[in-house]
Image 1 (cartoon, rainbow, N blue to C red):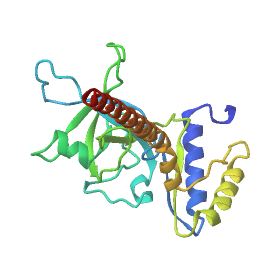
Image 2: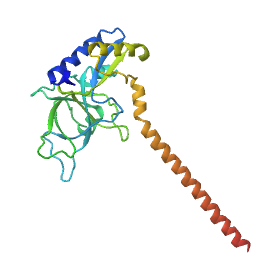
Image 3: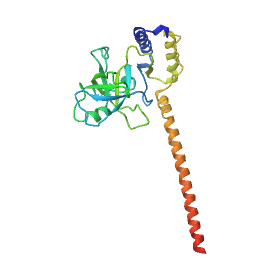
Image 4: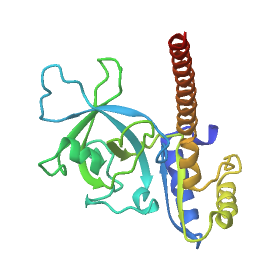
Length: 248
């Protein structure tokens, strides 16, 4: 909107909202992300700085999550090694990343990934677009981001200052039904033009992201049942025909 045209205005709005939310007694922590767990999200092709790919080897694809605030603490997670982001991370010359254990196991099986530099490119991007490189500063527990595939390697980076669309994630001590009106009130007090209708527990959001998977799985089950039924009918017909031939 016109109120948040510049990166400075958006950053200040995020900071004010974090301060207001942290003042709520039932709120333990808050964070922002471009996408919540299990909800899919953008992907990047990753390469490890200093490691030459084998002939014909393609760059692996990883999930790409931008975060702001106490993201892992809000999800109830503690880093396995390294550190979380500071205010300097993400600034020019201080590009940093946190990877999940799945990525560390896949690409750094016999070494410590802390301090290694990775480069990320947008799939099918123009060759003239330079990759975004960052130094790994932490390893997080593995949390599934993409649902329609195997447990995916994930790279977390600080949300850019000009991010205009981020999802608010709040850790609470009580039930969500009691805290939701307070969250809406604080958002409304900050700016009455910001909509905050889609407030839901993370479990509900994760369940909703699996809706397509359940529908697809149900369709496959139905098709398998129909195929089994047709096969049984065909087998019965062949058997009946053979019995008639023998009788004659």
